[in-house]
Image (cartoon, rainbow, N blue to C red; front, side, top):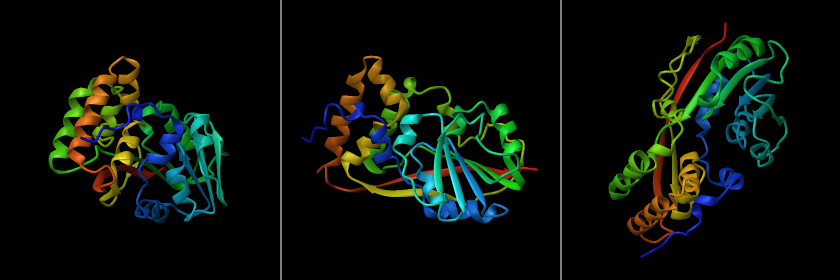
Length: 250
């Protein structure tokens, strides 16, 4: 039997930077294609800058903004890309300056009316706003059934209410902009067991369950999935569907 490390779920911001799945390059290409020009993109709630870095290959300047100084600390800086610690509702930008305003896996935390007011303030004419999320991962086979039970039933109660917005692909969010129909995209990765459990360690529900004294749920799942996985070094295909609400700011 292969047992996972007993403290796989106690990692912090460094784990977030290491294990969060990267978006496919087609996503940044689509956002750049739909923006009115390539002068400035702002990535709101940027975390450790995964999408920000990809946008930097398409825009002259990219600004990643996140309220967490710890997340910004782990972000990668490169030419044309900078970061600031700030909330989504107080964007550090001049009026009508941003060609793209993106928020990846973050909009469910925003005070949307205040954020949308800031979007209208900083958006250049016909700027693109994109609220991006990715759904529940898919593993396949016996792994899939055990994972789904863990996700929905065992740690389901430990997800914050906002998580339901992610699960629905932001379908129920108010989106008062001229909406576009984005292409079907997905994140496709091949991970070993350490990477898979490392990713789960970044979940707020996993941290909440541990803090609530339910480390037993996490340890039991880790043992079960390790047994089903086989050799820890075995790489397995994992995918996440990308959902997006995108539109032009008039």
